[in-house]
Amino acid sequence: MTAVRHRFAIVIAFVAALGVGTSAAAAESHTRTHTVAKGETLGGIAQRFGCSPDAIRRANKLRGDLIRIGQRLDIPDRCDGGGSEGKNEIVVHTVLPGDTLAGIAKRYGDDVDAIAQRNRKVLGKKRFLKVGQKLRIAPTKRVQPPRKVRYKIEAGDTLGAIAARYELTVSDIKRMNPKKDPRRLRIGDTIDLWVEGPEVRSAAVGRPQNGELVNAQQLPAGRSWYRRRPNRSWGTNETIQLLTEAFDAVRKKHPNCHDMAVGDISAKHGGRLAGHKSHQSGRDVDLGFYFAKQPKAGPKAFLDARNHPLDYEATWELLTELIGPSAAKSRVEYMFIGYPVQKKLYDWAKKHGVKKQTLDWMFQYPRGSRAMRGIIRHEPGHTHHIHVRFKCPKGDNKCL
Image 1 (tube, rainbow, N blue to C red):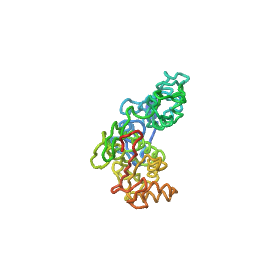
Image 2: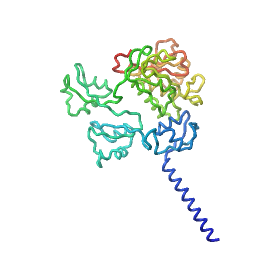
Image 3: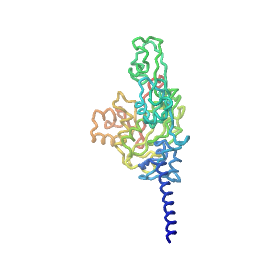
Image 4: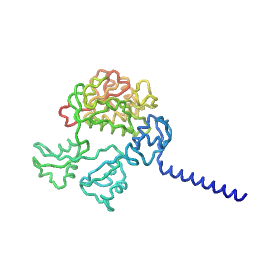
């Protein structure tokens, strides 16, 4: 009897050991969890954490893309982000004058120690930075590595004008050119600038109703938005940047809001787009509204804001992020929203303390649906989506 009990105890201990080992391995593989919020999709969650949808399916034994609000998902620490297993996309940052490891980490959303470890052969134990060093970065933000532009001084140039053109400051230019005295720059001299953006800049040509799009940039699959038709999601560099920054700002302040429904922007080369009179030069985009309770149809479909309860706080955040602080500084030319929905947004904002002066330059309401006032104007058929038209990008001389 004693021997039987002894053998049974060994079996129990062995099984328990197996259980502990399996649990430990699982804990090591899936140390992060995410609770599904309303409006989220599996693809959007995967994008947010730098994983592929397949990696999350395997970690949670999902058979398809169906997920439920409140469901807890294990997020693998090592993901196959659609290519190399266990790694997010790596970008290369060239160390600029004045750069610090902390500043680079903040810029890209990476970790100082992770950057130092990833680049230990370049930095050494003292983590000493030198201008021109190439650092491998794993970004968690949508920031493009800076590219070098060699600028030749022309007649009439000033450092202030050059800085404004490239969205820099005069101090930035001085920092980037430590060996050059700005007081001694002459026509024909060159300075080095590091700016964000693609190697070949986009161009909006002509009018939104009769134009084309050159070197277009596609809106990427996002962690806080859903592209209804990716093949119609091409825009200027400025349009894509303004949209992604606005969507991410809304999600940061309202983490439980659903993904934004993004409709058509432009075709890859612009020109006529079926179903639209405009959307020809990469400056127009159709967006949904944020709703308090996102129905099953969203965000894959536009929903009428007259019939579904709006998430006013998230929608207002979107409007103000896109429009900006004032009419003079706004990057938006027009924003078309149906008059009844304008009223709802106007009344909510007024009730929540937005100054009448601000509402006056933002809204056409309450002057009437034909009044030529306000950035936000009435257009028939725009109670279920917002049409945003951005101003011509700086430097696009053929944009009208």
